[in-house]
Image (spheres, rainbow, N blue to C red):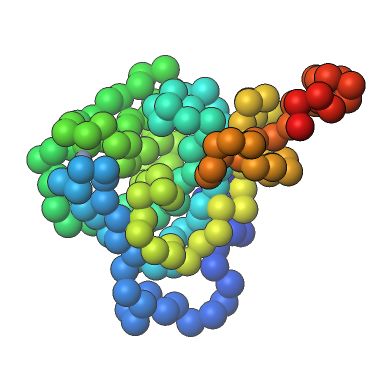
Amino acid sequence: MFPEDDEFAPTKKPKPVALAKPAAGHCLCGKVRFEIDVPARWAWHDHTQASRRAHGAAYATYVGSWRKRFRITQGASELSRYEDPATKTARSFCANCGTPIIYERARAPHMVNIPRALFSGRTGRQPLYHIAIEELQEWAYTGEPLVPLKGYPGVVWQRSKKKKRSDREGMF
Ligand SMILES: [Zn+2]
């Protein structure tokens, strides 16, 4: 079901692995640093409740890497691990700052998944896939048009559709 099978493998191009610089990233406090060989295996948006809670965010965007192409380059001793028996998954995070670092699933033991936001640069893989899109939260921002909020420089907002036109006219 998940695109970790060969059908989603990179196309037949010669592997640029040895030549390309690894993609590096780190947690918020900087104690844990890691890198993966590029290009990453795949990337996706995860809308499941477990990932939403683990990140405290509307959804999580992950980059998947073969485990053998992933390295903790600094701060391995800072990692704390939470295993969720219900979903047979494990999440490792920086014990100092709480940043989620590694998401592992028993169903794909050769893969590690890393939050896309932790990488400083490109990973060689666009997040084209969505898991559990039916769980997309109604409060998640999905690209609606935004306008400046009068009197608050730097703040934009999405005009509420619930207000009637007659109410709005008096505000601006
Ligand atoms: Zn940290």
